[in-house]
Length: 112
Length: 112
Length: 112
Image (cartoon, rainbow over all chains, first blue to last red; front, side, top):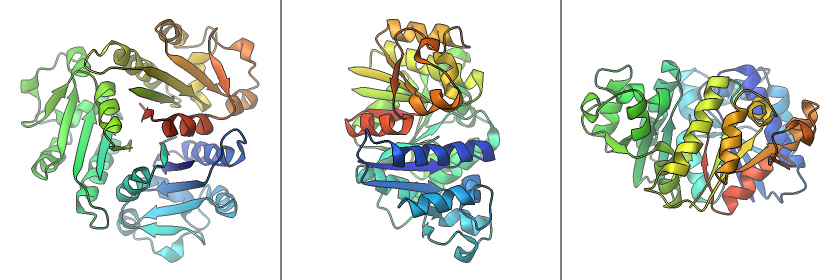
C-alpha cells in the first residue's frame, strides 16, 4: 500500500505529531507498505529545512526510505533554495499538484 | 485529474492559504487537471459569503473554472441564505456527503 | 459509499465539529452510505474516552452504526487501556495504518 502525508500545519507540535505518525506507519507490521511519502508546503516546510525544527525527524524518515517532497511555490514564497533543505528532500512544482498525482496513482492521503 | 479542496479551518489566514494552494493548482502545468472543486463547511464558509474575508479569492477561483460548493447544513446553522453567498457558489446537502461523492468519483482530496 | 473521518485536532470545539459532520453524513439522504468509520489518534482520542469531552457524540455515532477506532500507539503514549474507552470503540495498531487500509479498500477520507 502507499500513503502520502500532507505536512502543512503551522504549529511545530502538530508538525512533530505528523512526523511521528509517519514514523509509526513505517513500523506498523499489520499493514504492508510499499511507499510512504511526505508532501510539505506553507508553514509545514519548516522541518524540511536544514537545521529546522523537526529536521531530525525528517532525516530519520528519509533514512527509513520515506520520500520527502517540498512544494516549489512555498520555496519561492519563502525565498528558500534547494540547498537550504535537508539532504535528500526533493522539490516538486506545487504541493497540490503532487498530492493530486500521488492520489491518482493510488496513494492514501493523511493530513495529521 | 480531479481534486477537491476541503475548506473548514476557522482561521482566516489558513483559509487564505487553502485558496492560494487551489489557485496554484490551476497554474501547475506539470499536472493535467480536468476538475477542481472546493467544498466549504463550518467556519470555512466565510470566504464563500458575499463580501466575506477571502471572497475575492473565491471569485477568482470561480472565474478560473473551479466549482465552489457550500454545505447546506452550515448555511442552516449560520442562518445564511444562498443569496448571502458569492455569485456562482453552489449549495450541497452536506459537506461530508459531497466530499464522499467526489472522492468516490475519483477526486483526490486535499485539506489545507 | 464508504467514508472514514480522521479525528486528530487538539481543540475540543474542532473535535465536536468533526463529530457533527460525521453525524450529518449519517443523515444525508442524497448519498447512499454503506460504511462510516472514525479513526482517532493523538489529542483526537479524547472523545473516545469514557466520560471524555465529546464522548456523548461518540456514543450516538456508535448507536448509529459508525465504527469508531482508537490508535493503539496513542493509547500506549497516553497510558490508556481499552477499558478507559467508550464501550464499542475498537483499537487498531496504528491510526496511520488503519487510515491507509480503509482508503485502499475504497473509503473516502475526510479530515475535519
